[in-house]
Amino acid sequence: MSVVVIALSAACAGPPDGRDQAASQTCDDPLAAVEIALEDRIEPVYARNFEIRYGEGYKHVVIRAPWGKANDIATAFESSSFYLVDCDRPLPDLPEDANTIRIPPARVATTSTTQIPHFVSLDVVDRLAGHNRLDFIYDPTVRARVEAGEIVEIGDGVRLNPESLIELQPDLVIATTIGNPDLNALGVLERVGAPTAIDAAFMEATPLGRAEWIKLVAAFFNREAEANAVFDDIAAHYEELRSIAAAQHNRPRVLVGTPFQGTWHVSGGDGYQAKLIADAGGDYLWSDEGTRGALSLDFETVYAVGLEADVWLHAYGWQSLAAGLRSDVRMGDFAAFREGRVYSNDTRISEGGGNDYWETGSLRPDVILADLVAILHPDALPDHELVFHRRLAPNDAD
Image 1 (cartoon, helix red, strand yellow):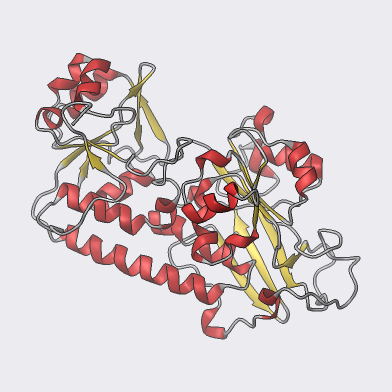
Image 2: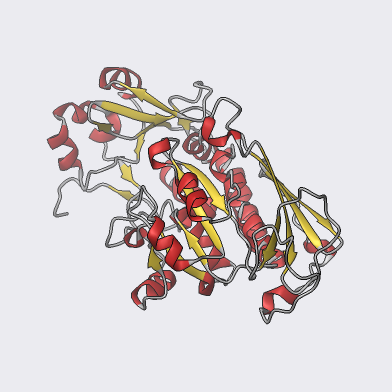
């Protein structure tokens, strides 16, 4: 799984730090003239890795990189801090070494579909100009821009293409890195001169913490009011569902994943999937493993622990139970398999293989939670129709 990094850059003409720009300037961007009311200022409730401090004529963004000093990729971003200044305002009196970013950005490039729903929900899709691996995008509004040639491809899904970035000249780049220096997107952005900052959403401990990063993206477009309204609805729905699940008398035992090349990867007990299962009223089999990262297990270990699990989630790569048996006849020994309680989260897939569970679902953990509550406690949400998940049929053609 990759670490997610957001590169946020100057939107108006001039150098990235704004120091050589005129003391005042004009721009005709309607989002630059928005005053942020006191009650709309961003104050994260669930997210722990960013904050925004509002000053006279600027926003001071502080991002806490949670990777730690041991990670060479992230060391430079250990205390990321920058100032956002509207492109129609004079540059305020800021510290001499301040990294100043003019907003709002007019041309944005993204490299992870997890950021796509932010632009859709904030009604700034027209700012998207580039993306890494276009066929992974699921959202129909964004796909329409792709088909119209309004969004260009800037990478192959792993590596960024420096030539494409130089040609695009985006005002804002959202980048990802997987920690491999040979594939480090941050290095590419530095070489092509794209200004960079950090987004630590991927490292948030809770689903709502991840979703709340829409507020940080909103700050670059002066859309705080809209982001607060969107997120408040998501959080309220999530908490309502969590209360419903907590009131159930049973907690079904939950197995996740399938083997890949001989290894069975499952979420750690403090991981994203484990949190969702717990909030849905499930008893996750590895809940005592106190790590956010994935656990790499052999088949025999999972077999011993998960044989009597009540529900099996995220059976990756299987179209049916028959496909599971074809992969390994021992799958039929699991109780959840025998009882037909095996589910995959692949209902919404783009033609190129992009999974909307990781796109829209990154912003809408409440919808994912509704699916899981309905799966684990069918009587609790009898009218809910699964959105991201599907129950595997016995045979491929069913």
